[in-house]
Image (tube, rainbow, N blue to C red; front, side, top):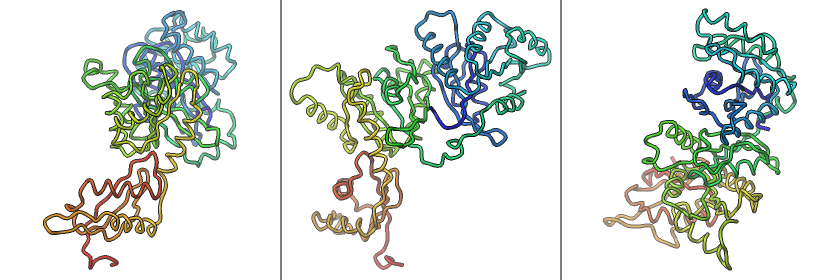
Length: 449
């Protein structure tokens, strides 16, 4: 279940304005909107509040009842799952097109759900279309409500109607104060991101296909892990090389959303295809994660498809660490999202690196480590001047950031800073998370003031 809040599903034929409504109400441009049927493929979630009542909107791909196309049939299945999960269903139709046979088939599907259904006639952009609204009474779903998502006409009435049909508040709805770990699943196209997401959730949450680019949105789903930890998993579109996406604006927006998902996550799962090893693009994505200061777990997927002999895993792991040496703090897991092999190890590792990224160490203990480090390896000198580290303190977490008060920033060589990082890691751990330093010049006589 995505959250303790009631769920409101937005369903209908392709291109009737579902995502436009979703974006207007959520207050963010979350779903990709373009006048091409089939742009929204997966279920996308956003939390909404109206007249003091909170609920979760689910945007879905368009339902094409007759299509045998693989992707369209999967989109239909995603919409059906949303209907099964929803407490209230908003059935969107199009006033400009009028009632269609596909609308009638969708209406038949909705009647079978026995859920509260609000019939929405969208794109009523001017008074001349008001009469068209009445023809939708023929669907047998009650009073149709005319709105214009683009011009934001009638949306308040629609939200009032949604709130009227919501179930009573639950205790879980009242208490949502615990931190939700934001977990982004990132990587190149077709490395198994959606398969791993579904495996972790234990349900068919996102569409899985051998066609690269099936996932276009960054899709959020909240769930609770076996240990009670609350997670929001973000399945992202595959990140291709920039020159490979210049000609397709839709995919470019998808990639931008994937990069944004890295920025807003607490932990990034970087998926790598075991059969291909670490590619140049994998290293670029790892670089994004590292530069954003995010905790990370490297997940080598499709491990079941690789021919192995004695020592293959250790040899492979060593190569991964070598290829991603700037991120050698990240643990490396070997799994098969398809078969479930070792997939149960992913969430405990995510939780472990999140705890490390959130960890604080005492100033006294930190300065003991810094003092021992300087005794073991003298700070560098330049032009007859020697680096002096007066003291350090932890300034922040996520990533752990240490303020070092020194005599001259120019004397702090990168290699010595890396040495101090290794000393801190040896003493305190911080596995799975980058460490940052903030250098602050201070005169010796000012220390303690």
